[in-house]
Amino acid sequence: MSEGEFSIHGYNIVTLLKRLEAATSRLEDVTIFQENAVKAQEETAGTSGSKVESKAKAEDDVIKAPKAKEQLEKSKAIQAYEDFIEEYVVPFVDISKKLDPVIEKQAQLFKKAIDEEKTFLWAASLSKKVSSTDPVFAEILKPINDIISQVVQVKDSTRDPKISNNLSTVAEGVPVLGWICVEAPVSYIPDFKDSAQFWGNRIMKEFRGKNEDQVSWVKAFLGIFDALKAFVKEYETTGPSWKVDGGDIKQNLQKLSPEKVSQDASKPNAGAAAPPPPPPPPPASVFVAGDSDDKTQKSNDTTKTGMNAVFSELNQGEDITKNLRKVEKSQMTHKNPALRASGNIQVHKPVPPKKPRNLSQRQTRTSKPPRKELVDNKWMVQNVVETAGGQPLTLEVTMDQSVFISDCEAIVVQIKGKVNAVTINSCKKVGVILDSGISAVDIIKSEHIEVQIEKHIPTISADQTDTLTIYLSKSSLDTEIYTSSTTSLNIEIEQGDDMKELAAPEQFKHTIDAKNGKLISVPVEHSS
Image: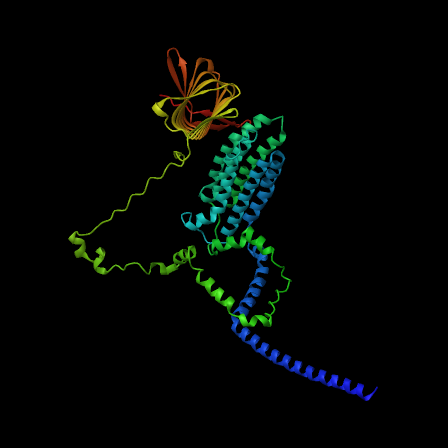
């Protein structure tokens, strides 16, 4: 290599070394600056770091939450209730799946209500007693009440006549779950079995020998009432069992809540490590630190506005009375005889409480508009109260049509022609004049009803009806009359030019035949 060529190469190497040294010096300066900036940010964001650690700890605690339900004590009563669900309620739901999707939906809701009731009974067995007048009691029963309303809504929203009896059977029976609110639940349960059996008997009569799944469905549902009564009689004779030194009912319900357990189960399992903290922010962001803190502060400033502020005021505990005016001794009549003797005492008489409404008394429904229309083959007469001038509502019917009268008051309905069937539901002071019918007249949950048959009707049935009068013509004396939970039933028949009144018995004497062990029931006769 020549000297000139070497000098050129040497010059290039020296130049490169100088440039490399300068670049290294600049990198060291930048590194020192960035380290100082990151350190300052970590000191400023110390609170955020602690939040990350506390969040990781909280998630680690939540991992163990699914085991909380298993750790709670389960009494023999709860175990028996679970057996009751498996042996009676689950088979009922399985049979419902074979019949119709709507029937299955209602049955699933029925089971869901019973599952919620099991959760309540379990929590009650671990908690101090809560009075039925305590607002907390109504609050903890709200989930059960909501599901019961959904069960009834399925019936109300379905117009399919093929399954109406099935839906009515469950809708009439589901209020039996209210036994947890009464002091004598053993005698409470049969009432709702009778209501459900009224509709179940129709299904049995229609499908016996034709569709055994329908017959099995009715038997399975009615069997639930008998099994529930046996359970209550053995374990909960006076209502739900409470624990004298138990805990808070709301806290125990939260521990046993199926939703909470399912949410907890979706968390990582107990063996999984806590997630690592987030990596430190990149160096370039150290110059904009503080923006997130400002946003957090603004968010905190708005957390106690609106409804949050209202609940904050209500949840003051003992401090809620601090603004009450103090009554001085000079204003107390029991400590100031002179004030009492002066007679200048303003006595504020308390407003007398309203008399409780009879539970069987139906409220007049005026919120819905009156309705009189023919839907398919059914005349719908609903929400009609006191027709103008007291004139009767007249319906011209044919043999393939039926009449449904519901939620009406103080009206007369005249049905001209031969009708298939007539149903009177939840009515008060309603009269029905019927020429003739093919099937039956059904009166359900009504008061002060009068039914007059001009020609002939095969059957009249009444369920949960108070004060019913039936007028039969000579051609309808062979009419069969069935009653259930019905009072003040009078039947009037023609006798010459006058009417003869026959009062149906309400008192019965029951005896047991010692020879064959059968029950003999005869009406009680009062001799004058």
